[in-house]
Image (tube, rainbow, N blue to C red; front, side, top):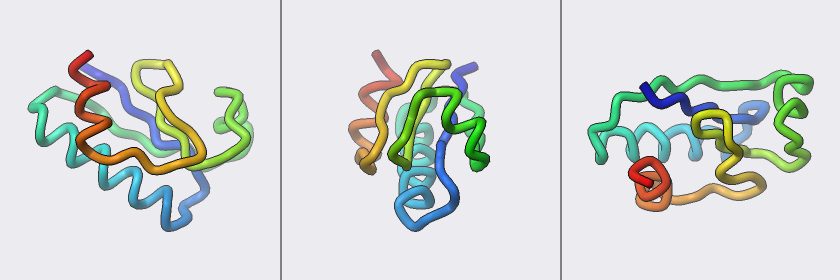
Amino acid sequence: MTSIQVLGHGCENCKRLEANAREAVAKTGIEAQITKVTDDPGIMAFGILSTPGLVIDGTVASYGRVPSADEIARWLKA
């Protein structure tokens, strides 16, 4: 199962990123668990200073912007 983490404090961009990640999972049919990391130590553990951030299977895929669902879907398929 793929692990997806959305890093951020709950701002609008963080919410859009989570929605895009859920849409990407639905589009690809990949089995994934999406979790939110909202605490500063948890976010900083990934070395991210600009949210929102997206982590796929422990690797930072994006931070400081909101990638589209199609872009996330490509990352999931790779």
